[in-house]
Image 1 (cartoon, rainbow, N blue to C red):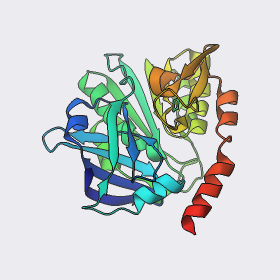
Image 2 (image 1 turned 180 degrees about the horizontal axis):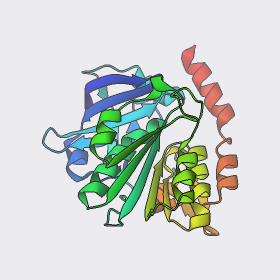
Image 3 (image 1 turned 90 degrees about the vertical axis):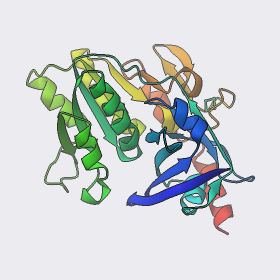
Image 4 (image 1 turned 30 degrees about the vertical axis):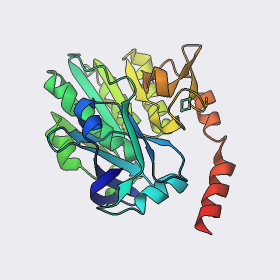
Length: 273
Ligand code: FES
């Protein structure tokens, strides 16, 4: 059992949990994920690792409450336990000295974006952090993101933060005015990652995207995270989660996201009854 030592509501429907998992904390690296099962009737589902504390033996997650499993998880309190937590899983982010790096995070992607930014900065990169939110109330960990970057930009295309630019618009602007960018990392929903990859594509700047949100069982067996990358079939859970955003077939990926909508809806309805 894995005890929840801290729980916090970060933003509407975004929940933070710090969980005792010493073995996972000991070997966690930026960009990896964990698989959880809340109770014996629960499904396994993946969440990005937002942070870890090796001394305290804890890992942190910041997740969006979107279906039955994340709702069940969000209903737990500090002191409660999660039945299973396996990890760290996935190939870690390739942290190297690239030069100028942009690290963009939106929604549940802000958590991993912060830990990746920290690692990239420690590797000697100049990091520009871009936080994409729908509105002010969705901003969280701004202080943390600022602390691990050299420059911080808040992007909200809704105009609710006094700005009308999404993360992809920020990338587009920086690149149009000739700023030197050596590498881009994006964490968030598939649509945000696709738009950011589109923005950097004309400039040939390698853009890594994290496909944790499309996984289901995380073992390479269910096939739900099948994705076409560079014309070849890949599985996000075993070959990723990070891939070259310019090589991902986004049309197929976004279409496949809708496959389980009906089942998810039915499952949530049954559970609520
Ligand atoms: Fe099932 Fe990757 S999540 S094969």
